[in-house]
Structure formats: C-alpha cells, structure tokens
Image 1: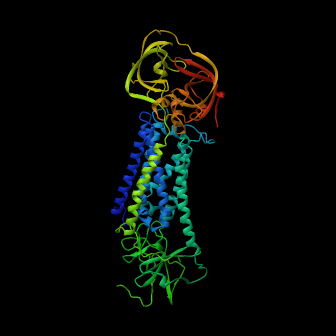
Image 2 (image 1 turned 45 degrees about the horizontal axis):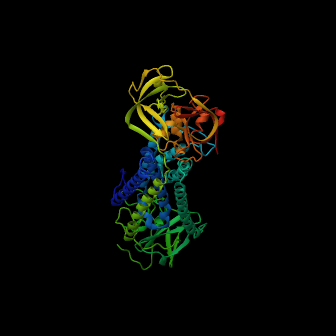
Image 3 (image 1 turned 180 degrees about the horizontal axis):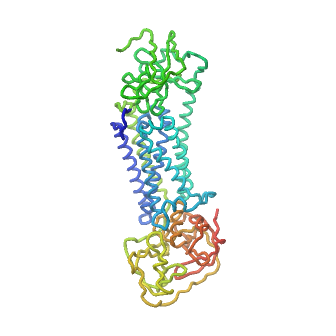
Length: 354
Length: 251
C-alpha cells in the first residue's frame, strides 16, 4: 500500500519471493541445459542456441501456468495468499523469459539471411489452412504483445491511471494470450517432436489450470447461492451478531451480484463494499488490523466506519448503513458514496477498546 | 452470508509471516522446486535426436578438386567425394564460386559440415577462399539413374548438415525457407518416418534443373512431401530433378 509511486515497494516477503523465483528459474534452465547436453549422447546433442531457445520457451510456459494457477488457488485457500502477494514479479519475470526466447528465435531462425529477421520469421510462410503449414510464430508473437502490455502496465501507477475496472479487464487478456501460447506450441514445436512427453505435459497443464478455475468457480457459485434478495427493501437481515467474530469480516451476497463486507470491530458492526479499490480483492475475507479492514490480497487498508484508507492514502470504498435489531444485523442495501462516514451499529453490552 | 471467517492470523505481505503460512511455504517451495527440475528433465530428455550432423566451425581446412557451379556450386575431389559450397550465414556461394567456365581445378578453404556422407564446405571469409589451380583433371558428368519417387522432407542443406541441430521439422521451417531463399541448397531428407535422425538418403533437390524454389514450393519446406523426378548421381552427391507439379505434400 502506498501514497507515492516507487518502482518496487520492497519488503522482506518480496525479497524472499524474488530470491526463490530466481533460484527456481536458474535451477530449471541449468537442469534443462545439462540434460540437453547429455542427450541422446555426447556429440549428437541439440545445438546450444536451440537448447537455449527451448529452455527459455518451456520455462516461460511453466511460469505462465503457475501464474494462472495462483489466482484460483488464492480463492480456494488463504494459504496461497503469499504466492498472490508478489505475483506481478512472477509475471514480469515470465515476460522477460518469454522475450528472451523470442529474441533467440528471431536471431537464429530469422537472422543471418537475405531478409529482415522479423519478416522472415513472421511472414516466411503462410499456409493458414493447414496444421503443418500454419505459421505458429505469429501466434507466439501476438501472445508476446499481450504479455508486454500486461508487464508494462503491471505497476500500481498504471492501475491508478487506467482505473481498476479497465486495468482488470486488460489483464484478463492473459487468458487470450494463454490460448495463443497453447496454439503456438501445438502448431509448432509439438509437431517437431515424436515423444508424447511434451504433449502430455501440455495437456496436464491445461487440465490443471482448468480444474483450479472450475473449483474456484464452484466455490463462488456456492457463495452466490446464499445471496439475499434486497429488492425494494430498505433494510435486509444479513446475520446474527453471534456469528461475527471480533476483528473479522464476512461477505454478504446480494441477488444484485453486489457484495458487502460486514466488519465487527471495537464492539460495533460496519459495512463497506466488498471490493477492494486496489485490485478488486475480497475485503469480506480480510481482517481488522490496526483498526482497519485489511484486504487479503495486497494488504490495502480501510477504516470500517467511512471506508477510507487512513491518511496519507486516498483509496475509498462505498459504505452501508447498519443497525442491530435484537441479535440480528440489518444492512441498508443502498450504498453511500465512497468515503461517506456511517455510524457503526453498537453491539449491546460490548465495550469500546479505546 | 458466507461461512464464518476463521480466526487464524491473516497473511499480509508487509507483516510477519503467520505460522501456518510459514509451514505451508516450507513444504510448497521445495516441492515446487523439485517439480520444476523434474519438468525440465522430462522435457529436455524427451527432445528428439537431432541426428549425426557435424559443423566444424573452429577448424579451417583446404580441399582440392574440380569446381563446378551448375546445377549448384560444388567441389568434387579426385576420389569422387563431393562437397557442396556455401557462404557463411544463410547465403549461397554462386557469386564467389563463378570464377570461369565449368569445370576448373580449384583449392577451396573453409569449414566442413557433414552428415550421413553428405558434405558441405562453408567458405572461409578470405577473398582467396577459392583458388583456381589449373584445368580440371577430368570432367564430371551426372550419372542419370532414371525416374524415381522419394518421400521425405525438403530441408536446407546447410542447417540439416549441422549448422542447426536440429535443422529440420516445423519449428525450423522459417529458418529453412530463409536459407533456401538466400541460395543455400534445397535438399530432400529421404525417410518414411519424419522423425528418423538418419535418413536413407540426402539428395540435392532441383526443380526443372534449378536449385531455386518458387514461393509455392517454399510452403512445402519442412513438411512431409512426395517427389517424383529424375534421379542422378554427381560424384558422391545424389540429386533428384522434378517439375513443380511432381512435388506434392503428404497428409
């Protein structure tokens, strides 16, 4: 969370994350090259430039799968939150690896000839109607362009400039790029390899990503199935006071697909939008830390009473009026303008901590 | 309302790592590292054999024999051993090889590429990489073997003989096309199995007597094809000469 923009807001977790990521990438590349130089026998091995291209290309695909798994994994278990926290470093690393792969491919397959390297690789042949003649390089290039836009706009500066909704939509293009990458591999390198290992691994990757997304989707549907119909009601009954633990939040789903984060803190209950102003994280799955509702994704914080980030931060959430009738918590489903203070509903018999 | 939130400490990136996350990561990170190394091993070990191709780019050598430029620049040694001649990079050596009427006795300096009995000399960069040494010892005429049909893959000779490993297959298609466009010899790796690293033969492909391929035929490079044409032998080099309509893609 930041009030000013820095290239990277370093902390211990990010450093550990990046060290682990660097070790993982180095280990993968070193293993690939070492095994590649030993197979099938010395003197009859794949050329070093091709080996480098393949090592980088396959590493990029492995990293892309990890990136796409982390999102739904974090929806399924809060244990995956540390993987999500610094995912943009993983994303930028992935892009750089993919870019290196593309540069080597352009240099060696497209270089040293009588044509421009880019034109020779991207427009050298064009039998789009056949699998064996389809220029698979074009698919990889299109995916790389998308990844470039994503990597270039991954910083919070661009998130603020573009707005969370547009930024999120833009970054959802990762699924289009993923499909392009799968087609790039299936219509290119896979056709050059007789071993089923590569195809099986690719299918395994696609199935794994699909499974995580379906599981996360089912979890969301279950949450949605408990949605409360708020049509024409000024107050809706959302919970029993006894169901809410102190310093925690809960998600209330409305039929209108709106979600409200219900926060119990300091003997009172407040309600704010469930959608974090940073990247849309689920605030109702967060906790109250230092008096602020804290997003489980990146730690953005908001005061429960007015939905505002504490100064000097400027993020704001919509707030909702809350009252308690007996032991029932009632919420007015009409959102107030972001940052509007609403008096928290006092729980009878509870004491303020300060 | 959703299920009641657990009371375990929540992970926040800028706060100390909760114990349950620490335990989870202590198990997950080594497991991920092992999975990555296992994946790298599986993929690298599963690469196909690029074949017994050799490019000795570090040792300049000299060869003597008869230099001819038609249908493709080549040097035929006295014992019949035939070397196609190419430039560095993805370019043919027609210009530097044309030093007078065919055939001429010559000495050629360069670097050897070799695969399954086929040989290519990549000319040294020196201006005198080809030196005419006198009249030819004897003229070499193609020994026509008659019509024949072969199946295999059109490759560029230089990459396939060792400049790229592998120098065939779909992933190498754009490179092979660029090489042939630059004047490197189109060759046919004759084999029924497209992944066989040791083709039955490696033939110089001529289309109506020329090693130049039309854009339509370039599309067939690096794909399985069937070629009906006239087969010949020049020194140790086998050739197949076909008309464009007799070069067909295989499914």
